[in-house]
Length: 382
Image 1: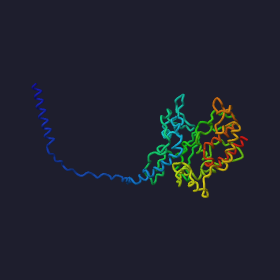
Image 2: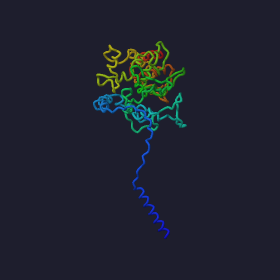
Image 3: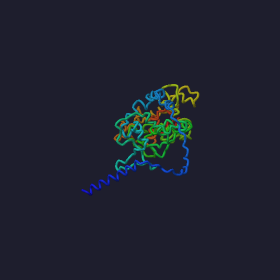
Image 4: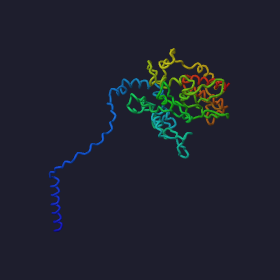
């Protein structure tokens, strides 16, 4: 007990000296000045955010006309997103599926092995969410546009931040890449359209010499071969009396070389139901090149003459219905239990009919290529 009291007293004494030292005054001794440091690198002057610049676009007066135009379009109304919950269709028929597809985070897998599938170039094949989507929303602003990339509106041409302006590999043949950039669309904004407006992989283009067995009433390029017709490719190029024009920007199509999706379908227009986000071609856009045009024709002259002939020949042979569905041997819609077996040239003629039917431009996207596909298909059937 005495030892404990001794230790306690010593502790109190030592602690008092500590407090005394901590609270005592201390006068530092001045030393010599240190050596000056090296100057840092000057930064780049920033720019002050200009609210007026933001309001130019982010205001009701600017956005309301865009929204009004959009809701009249096929993207904004109708049944374009009716099948958007399906894993096979979501990449084009569902806003979220389209974003997922472009992100590259979803890839096709072999159902048996679980391995990722690759195209012939060895690249992973992107696909829609394999589980599908609970809700399907139409392709809207956030589908085609993302956040501003740089806020350098003077030097960054893609100031509207279109999600994809890069060249696009085709689903039907990944060895083929389309880049719609040209003089009217230097950035390639029209490449955003190719992601969906291209033939799907449901059925291959018929080739070779063996008869072709068709097992679906929807045989042909599903559903949007606009970009490939515009490019002048992916039809069944049957040999005939009409030569096929060159393909691509250096080919024989004046439209492919001199204009683009956005130039024709999104140009400024004096008519509220045309141009812009209606995506309807406008006369104002046409007359920038066709300066004597007074109205947009319904079709090219070749299409107006020859497409009905091709249709009627296929109907007469029992290959398609009046509405264009492919028929099987029994006369009902073609299926795996009711196939249609035809010579390869006649299968190619069916493919070309469906290509031009699905293109929806009535020959306007590529008049020369359309003319060759029609005339040579008719010859093959006759």
